[in-house]
Amino acid sequence: MLPDTVRPGRLRRRLTIAFVLVAGVSAGVLAGGSYLLLRQARHDASLHAAAADARYQLVLAGQFLPLTEQRRAELLTSFEGSGRHVVLVAGDAWPSHPAYAPPLGDQLRATVAAGQLGYERAGLSRLLVVGGRIPGSTVELYVITDEGDLAAGLDQLRNALAAGWAMVVLLAAAVGHTLARRTLEPVGRASRAARAITEGLLATRLPVHGRDEFSAWAASFNEMAEALEAKIAALHRAQERERRFTADVAHELRTPVTALVAAASLLRDHLDQLPADARRAGELLVTDVVRLRRLVEDLMEISRLDAGQVAVADADVDAPALLHAILAARGWRDRVDVDGDPVRLRTDPRRLERVLGNLIANAVQHGDGEIRAHVTRRHGRVVFEVDDQGPGIPLEHLPRLFDRFHKVDPARSGGGSGLGLAIAQENARLLGGRLTVHSAPGLGTRFRLDLPDAPDAEIGSAAAHSSPRSPGGAR
Image (tube, rainbow, N blue to C red; front, side, top):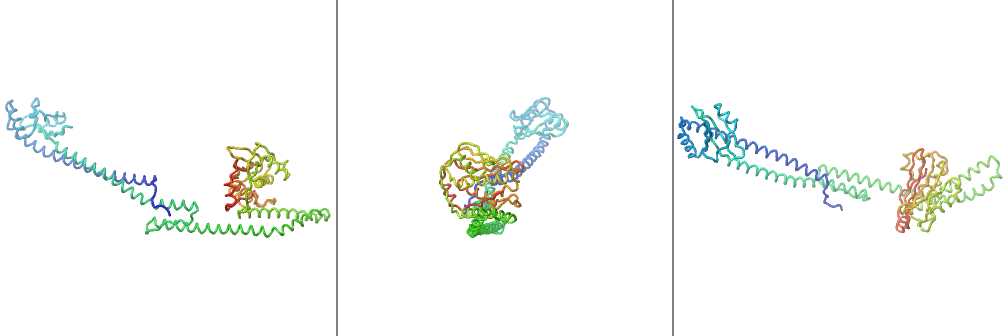
């Protein structure tokens, strides 16, 4: 049963961040635009009201002309008494209240001097200054309007919009995270289901709810899983049939081949007594019977490996001595050089001899030039290497080199059965080792057997009783 939770991942974070960015930018643009439009409208309304009041005050100020010192004082006192703050400019500047005497900008003074109504806002003091010339004179009157309340209201609006924007961002993050989690949850389930199928749980299926895209995806995934399960089951049955066929053929052939071998041995002993034209046919018959006997022996061994009817018997092994013994027994001393370290290890000598014998036989039969068998100890492992200087193996054949009955050149008439490397690989696995090959056309071939330096009873026992994998073939 697959868990319902999905671990946070980069895609979920990216979707959440994208959702937050879209919502945050949209809300920020809307809030900022609304604030700017409202501030401009409030400033324009305040300016229009101040300009209308300034025109009226300029008309009232005309009653104090001609402007003497006494009249100037009366004018300033009158404006201040009515709650309005002004600055009177007649050569010098006289404010009605010292706290409301902002500096007058040059552009404002120039506009007023030209006979027009001008205005400016005095920076941080939040004062709106609207000025003009008193009709019938050159005296300038500037009416000061305190926009502190307006600025405070705009500040409150700005703070409220900022708080609202922050809430929108937080809400967008929560909603985006929830939507991303729910959206990607089917993806997580599909990922875990695919991983379960990879691990061999072929009965894994995804739940199908509704008719949305994910449901269609889950249904397609389930169909694929069912087809894959059926295909693997069919391949397994075919493999079992192949193994039973191999075992049955080897068993049925063993008795007649034994009789043929005995008859061929007798015929070989009397080849010299046969006529010349029959002697060649007899030699071919003896050779083919020997090949047939080796094929049956290989089939029997493959059958035992498939059935798990093999055991590993560990013993102390002198690796260089074993290599020399293999060469002596098969007459290859003149073809193969042995070098390396005086290595001893504990393993099954019979199965190790089988692996090395097949590797060296493969090099002798298909290699060329100097053939070398090397043994050394590396990083707590014992490594055997068999090198030849033959034509090498084409790259497209390397993945299938350890397949059963696979040959690089099927047209060859050599005595190989295509099972030598298959048997070598399976025996190497039983010993807890690994068999690899490195080759390139024109550069020769190197087979490498990597074995544990210390006995590993658990590996040997598990290998001897487990169902073996599909072994490989020979060149």
